[in-house]
Image 1: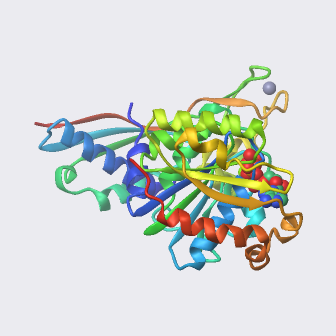
Image 2: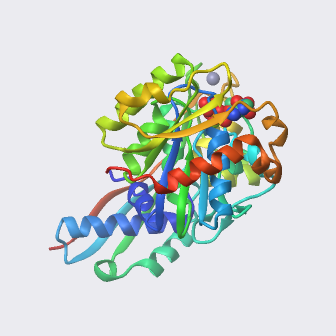
Length: 132
Length: 247
Ligand SMILES: Nc1ncnc2c1ncn2[C@@H]1O[C@H](COP(=O)(O)OP(=O)(O)OP(=O)(O)O)[C@@H](O)[C@H]1O
Ligand SMILES: [Mg+2]
Ligand SMILES: [Zn+2]
């Protein structure tokens, strides 16, 4: 996912949570991002700083990357995602839409493209805290 | 664990006035051709139009229209390239036209991801080219794009019609608007499906003929717009523009 789109998505969602939970101010947000998304942390922090306002004005965003692990559905072999093994164009495609990994990555053991992302695929908001 | 993409999609589509899914029960009835021609005609009429190919594993609209060597622009998100005045989004920008096999959850994740990053801006019409059947794509569109309305394509084949009815049922149960039905591949040998629709309370939008010349015009929008099918579509589009859909 693109960093700016990601930052906007976080802002929209946290703003809604703040409304729903009737928070006066959001103090901290914890976000986990799958390594597969290859998010540039500096860019996303910059984007978040640009976009935060209102109840999110003073929010501290903590973003943690989760290592990506893939597992073959045919032979059950599991392996770690390594961006450095991909050429740049492919890495960029996976950055935008991680599922296209199924077009470019093969199980190193049996060659199948029917694998699952065991972890490190998605981005999610783990927690939102603030004052009521 | 909250998925921020869902909220993002709502915002991304907030300036899109009409979202039309071109759908069918059976495969191969002409959805992709109809979705492409529909987008072309709407754009020609001066509407702001977007087209997204949601058949991620077998995308076709880029081949029908002749979209080549285009890539979205990165601008605080992804801006789809404009081709013949249509903003076109397809997974082929990312999968590079390589084989892509996706299971259910992977489809949903690709769907959420693409819709969450794509900046359509202001659109009068966003056309969705759907894969056939009532499966992941249909369910995700209904779940995440509540304002979507469906056009159902069928041939006169009883096999196609039977599944079209199931699709209509599914949409009615979920209270999703149906603009109407288009009968494609009409020939002198086929019976019109029009008479069989009374019970379904679904608008019949019209029919498009079987056209052996159609395939030759793929990749060339000027020629495509001159095909018999496109000429017949003009009238259907006028109907689409005027149909009132219950919500
Ligand atoms: N009116 C027509 N006359 C002749 N050929 C047609 C007509 N409509 C569609 N076709 C042809 O039928 C085939 C299927 O069309 P198309 O790909 O648009 O169907 P589809 O419903 O999108 O298929 P799928 O379910 O696989 O997505 C294509 O080869 C197309 O060229
Ligand atoms: Mg199709
Ligand atoms: Zn394997």
